[in-house]
Image (cartoon, rainbow, N blue to C red; front, top):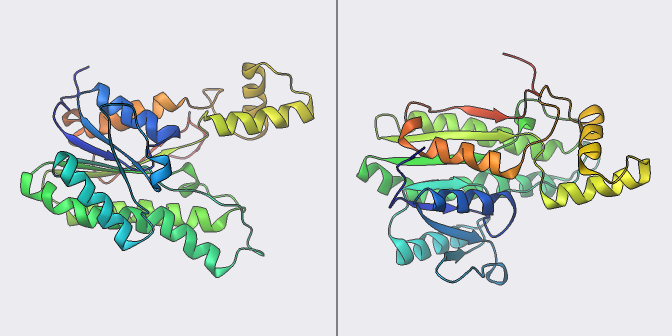
Length: 258
């Protein structure tokens, strides 16, 4: 399927590794001029010919630095994928005010800063895509990590507000909310758990135990990173031009409500 992204300038935050890197490479395969981002200079090394920027999105100065680098490399941004964000351990009785503020900085304000910088040029062009990477925890939060789920819930709410703010501009704003994704970190963690619990070493067997014990869903597995990247790429395209202001789950049917 031709997604007609050729020549579009796309910034994918937190794309020096993990799911963000797969999203960035998928957009590049579809023809976009992709700019990879990392929070630190040490993590910003890319392959020859790839565009790369760095800057700490948890500060105004860092976000401005990222935008300035993008403009110098490729001009104004057409597609902004706010993939950067992180979780941290926490419980209601132990998470401090600083812990809550840290999650808000990393998962909400990091995106808001870039949106404020990038959206005026999109409005001037009459076309743009803004996508936030959320979590199904914004639909069904757990009792643990309340600060993280609250921040991701705020991100999704912010996106609906932004879609209304950008009405009639040609810019769409959507949140993509995955469930469990098979990342190297997640797989490594579950392999350790499998060893302790005697689940075996075959990934398919381990995955079935994950579904049985922690992530029940009708598809009977967890998502591959490429599946999330493919959804993001589609939402970036003109073919998804009437999808706007949505929080789209990609969870195999784990969240059970209409």
